Image 1 (cartoon, rainbow, N blue to C red):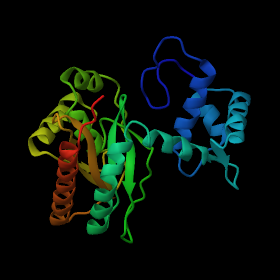
Image 2 (image 1 turned 180 degrees about the vertical axis):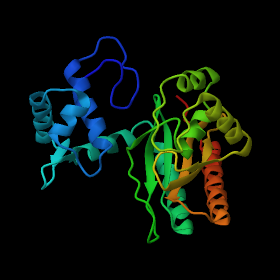
Image 3 (image 1 turned 90 degrees about the vertical axis):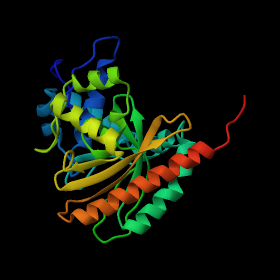
Image 4 (image 1 turned 60 degrees about the horizontal axis):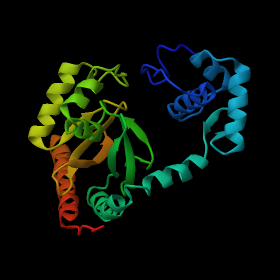
Amino acid sequence: MSEATDAAGTKRREGNQVPVIERMLDLLEIIERRPAGTSIRELSEFLDMPRSTVYRILNTLEARDVVRRSVLGSYLLGPRLLSLAANVVTGHDSELVKLANTHLERLSQATGEASKLSVLDGDGVLVIAVAHSSGAYGLTVKPGRRLPLHAGAASRVLLAHMDGGDIARILNSPLPRYTDRTMCEPEEIGRSLAQIRRSGSALDDGEFSVGVMAVAAPVHDRQNKVVAAVSIPFLRIQDRSRIETLRTAVTGVAKLISQELLNRPTHSG
């Protein structure tokens, strides 16, 4: 595989790394982006990797249930990743998850849409809590999913409240385009972030997934630092009043969670 870019389109870092582990993670990133599954041939060609190497890595991952083979022979992500993701979600963010879960459930029941709570995870965003849709056309969201910082409502809410130096670093790095609506120019994203800070919410109109919109709002801790984002993803609609209803709902829940964080007793050492 070329050292210029990896599967996510980002520049590969130099340093003390293990090549076979990097190849394994490259494979998992490609499989993640193909929910219907992918073949050894496709993985080999996309990553410029010998088929024998791809086969051996996949065999190892399959033995640990990290990937699985469909009845058609294509490879998909395996169930072992769910337990790994669960441990991430119940780690340092466990208190935030417990606090937010009830609010997310009420939000989804009130709107009929799925809702989720996301936090910063390095140079990406991690979904740590989810409430499923009660509507017939609601979207399915899974905890443990990692998303880019520049595309999506929750992602841009979190990006908007990062330190200025970190924002500049992110915006000046290669930014993959996921749909024809993805914002990739630093100036355009910068204007969007300023608007988010002014309005207190964000709207995604198909930036990350075609035909999917989302609204999001920030969650603040007792130091008024943004520590998470509440969001509602939904199928693209033209009804502006419906969008504003969802925006109002998600903003209200983000404020409720923030208030609970403010009122939560501190633990002395």
